[in-house]
Amino acid sequence: MYLCNSIIQPLKTTSNHFSCDSTRKRKLLLHKNEINYLSLKKNQLGYTLIALSLLWKKSWCKLSFGLAKGKNKIDKREENKQNTWKKEKLRILKKTNIN
Image (cartoon, rainbow, N blue to C red; front, side, top):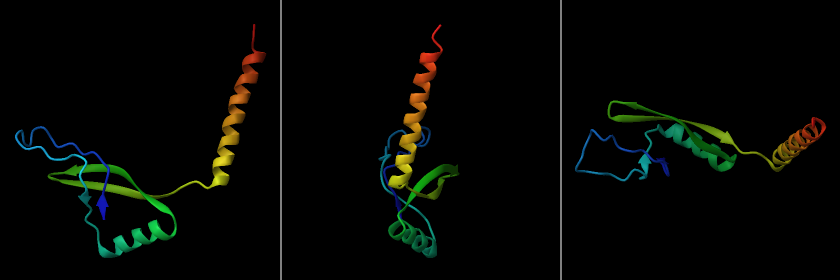
């Protein structure tokens, strides 16, 4: 498994004459059963892997990530209805509070 499309800038104090690509692919160190579990969830059930935090320990970088599931069309429709109702409510309150 690889971490792609993430920008990790090198420390300025480490090297001045050598610059590396900050958006290169980085290999994640995982056990075989962890890789199998995550790939199964990602491919079959429609989950997505999201990087949550990045920690530095000496020269190693530790990444904690989680599984997230996207919204359905029904969920998106409900959220749109609630947002439009909030906007409408604010318009009504603004019109009624005219002094």
